[in-house]
Length: 416
Image (tube, rainbow, N blue to C red; front, side, top):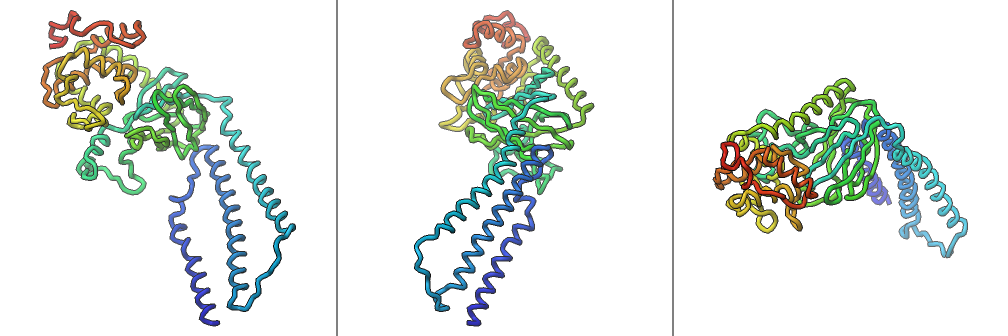
């Protein structure tokens, strides 16, 4: 008898000590409080229901363990032979119902508050693309794309063999500073203390914009607009990701939100508006061949490398190679049409809405002169601008004219 009691005592001690390891890193396991009013209410609701579940678990398993221990056969206990108990059935029906109602009331209140977009002070449209985000500040006219930073994209192409110390000298990717594959080229900048309304949609497949610290997770669905909101109380950088499987590079669609004071946000908006105005000047001026190739390499790394790979070799059976391809070494008109219009029925999407005239001219010039292609061609932003104007008039379905027929063809600034 004594040995049985000792075994039970030892087993109970082991079971009691098992949660201590998880408790030591509870902050990493549990839902974070976040930095918004809603995120704090969600956390409070989560913890309240968690403790209710813990209490129910302790009560249920406690009764089971005690019953099994005190009424085991070795003690000579005789089992009862009753068939049912109306009282017990009423109790275990009414008590859970009361618990559910007690949890549903505060949960419904928080859900209703999460859907209340009234009195918003700033509206931002979030559009999902494979595999990037577009942000449109509807109140100021600022818009840009945000995607995995090109240095991180280049490093991940090396797979498991990548040496982060070599790829990112002087940077640390350990602990809380672990931002490898979580950095973007353009952060979403927002002011603190303002109610921000987010409108979510998609240009291709279903995505999901999720920033845990803001308690925001909303599906971006083609043809639909979903809404939610946040009021960030603390300046800082808050990271998220796409939470809906959206294709090959779903895992490489990070979200970075930077919350700043109002005066800093106003200055940032002014800078962005000036930058957008200057993009028109880039399309007007004439670029030399070296400028286009250099700029095109950056555009390629940011927008093309995920599919066509760092050396333009592509992925057999999925994404065609650019090195030595008929598109990159053949007709420049076909090349331009492919980039601007995409290829129906494939993963090659339209870049006419994603890239500027200068970006398109640069990346095409780069592709036609890199990876051993060596065509010597140069495409000017002004040529792309002229064709884009025709595309708009023609609903963007086909190129209305050819680069080869343009006057710049035989000039030093045209296609050489």
